[in-house]
Structures are given as structure tokens and as C-alpha cells.
Length: 185
Image (cartoon, rainbow, N blue to C red; front, top):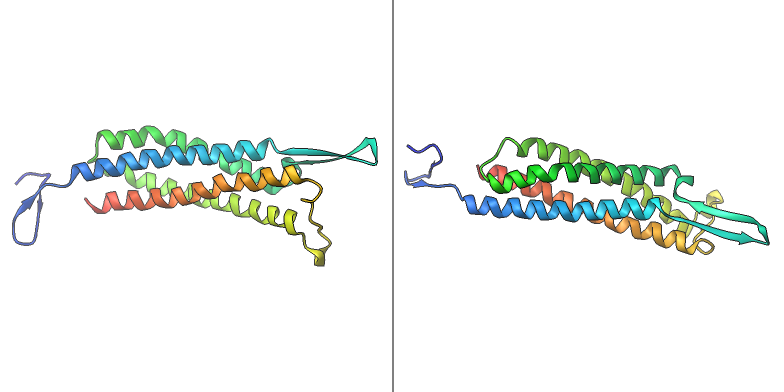
């Protein structure tokens, strides 16, 4: 019996669907590119966010920068790490397109995709909490909303969350696609 054949219930022999796995691999590659753009764009947008406001005189100024808040620094580092991982995983994704029967290399990919999903979710969620406080404040703890004064700063930080949370959704799809490709074997 051919080693690549699969026996089905009534004894008929059927070949695995290689074309379907190749399509999944191509979609995996495209989703990785989309996630690279989202995480890299978010890291750059947040990392370059700052705004300076004059106060009463020209010599006294208030400044808001991403590195003033450790949560935003974590967000930039997390998105940068995930972006670098995605770039490094692109050759493996190309390998899956060329060799659609590759199965063993998908298992570590699922594992590391899951780790990166957790890191990205932690960074994006933490930053989202700070952005929420910047917009709404918390009067019970005397944290006032700063977005009325630092409007540009708040818009950029809010916008950077979009790419990061979009990449979270892409990672979920990548993990499901890899699991689906493994289950077909």
C-alpha cells in the first residue's frame, strides 16, 4: 500500500488533499504578513507618540511621551518582539507552501504562535486600560482624564491599539489554521 494513501471505512484508498493544505499554507503566509504590518505599525505609532503643551509662559511646558508610562513601554516591546517573531516565521511559512505535507514543523509553530498571542494580548490589554484612563479618568482615585489637553497623544495611542488587537485576531486565525492543517493528516 502506498505510504501517502489513507484507507477509508469501506476499504477504498484516497490520497490526502495536498491542494487544500497548500491553500491553507498560502493563507497562513498572507495572515503572517498582515500581522507583521499590524504589530510593527502599532509599535512605531506608540513608540513615536509624544505631545508638548505650553503652560502659562513659554518656558514652562507639559510633555506626554509613551515612555512616561511603563505600560506603553511594555506595549512597544511586546509588539516589537511579536513583529520580529513573525518576520522570522515567514521562511517556515514559505516552506509549508512548497512542502504542503510538512507536519512536524507546524507543531512548534502552533506553540510559538500561542506564546506570541499571549504576549501580544497582555501588551495590548494593558495599554488599552491606560488609554481608557487617559480618556475617561477615575475621579475616585483622583486620576483625571488628560485627553482634553493631550488630544494628539491620545489619538495616536488609541490608534496604535487597533493594529495590535487586529494582530491578536490574526494570531487566533493562524493557530486555528495550523491546527486544521495538522488535523487533516
